[in-house]
Amino acid sequence: MTEMLQIYKGKIMKNTKIPGAFYQKFNVKKGLRDHNGKGVMAGLTNISKIEGFDKDGNQIPGVLEYRTYSVKDIVGNLRAQNRFGFEEVTYLILFGELPTQEELQVFSDILAAKRALPKIFVRDVILPSPSADVMNSMSRSILTLASYDDDPANISIEKVLDQSLYLIAQFPLLAIYAYHAYNYGKQGESLYIHYPDPKLTTAENILRLLRPDKSYTDVEAKVLDIALILHMEHGGGNNSTFTTHVVTSSGTDTYAAIAASLSSLKGPKHGGANIKASYMLDDIKKNVKNHDDDDEIAAYLDKILNKEVFDKKGLLYGIGHAIYTESDPRFEVFKMYLTDLAQEKGLEEEFRLYEKVEQLAPEAILRKHQTYKGISPNVDFYSGLVYKVLGIPEELYTPLFAIARIVGWSAHRMEELINMNKIIRPAYASVAESKAYIELDER
Image (cartoon, rainbow, N blue to C red):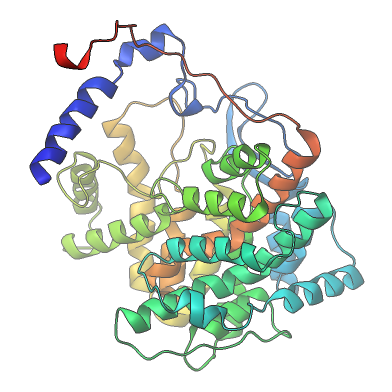
């Protein structure tokens, strides 16, 4: 069978590979990006704004706004008042306006009431099929939840909103229970299933559900809360959100659309990049003897880019972004919170190594690749370290991204349903030459 698969692979490669020159000939933008890396305009949105250039094409510090409000301002206010913000920002992204104190309380109560899986769901759906791939486990659970909905195919805005709120509330449970199932079923560890506390925020409940003793510090919970807010939404053009728009445009149900978006997010070029960045830094930490030697670190970064070490893909994970050039605003906020957390956990030395790589990696990329735009660390660079400091297992790094990003997916799904009435169907040019059919006995 292995030999036949190799033969079949050869046929596929021979008859499927398209010459690179054809993309220029037909003016096709690979990855829907132009030669400068800018995305092809495919739609409009008023949910968020991300910018790395001004109107004249000049590079600027990265801009990220949720419903016209700067994320930096939102996080700055939360930090100044020392309060949680996931529920408030979820309200803002879904409904387009900031809630009053009363509206926020009602909304938080609604999410808390929906944060309960159907009876025996964990026993019958999650526990029997443990997997190290928590994202796949979540996809299975999402599609199974559709069978508990009395009208899953209803795509009225009222129904989709209700389904969206339900899934936003359920995602932390689906992720963490799937991890516990894996830890118990595959790793031989003890099994514990805690119930969420309706009086706690989303971030607090995540740590409560995850840890055997349900304990956490206020600093830990607030750092996780900020991490969720920073990952919540990032425009309509990122791969998973674009998937939401594409699949929604076909008229499919909410569960299928969100499962498709989740499948997109798990890819290592998208939501899985944070764990790759974490692995890369672990590799650097292991192989660079003197963590204070800039030259030694830079030399090892060159080896990574030259495909000599690490995963031999030639990529520095967590460095660079398709839109942001001078800076990723999410990265800046993450680093500010991580400074406090690293001191609390006694991880200043590891944090300094991250800072060294942060400074040296863009220079290494510029040495290797001549590029017109600036290169700076993105949100994935420090998110892995944040989760590591919080004691989050690696299997949950990308699922935590999903727990946040489903808010944006939900808003974009409703935006697609409200504003568009056509299925998204881009054109593909055929470059195959027609052939006359050959009879079987003549081949």
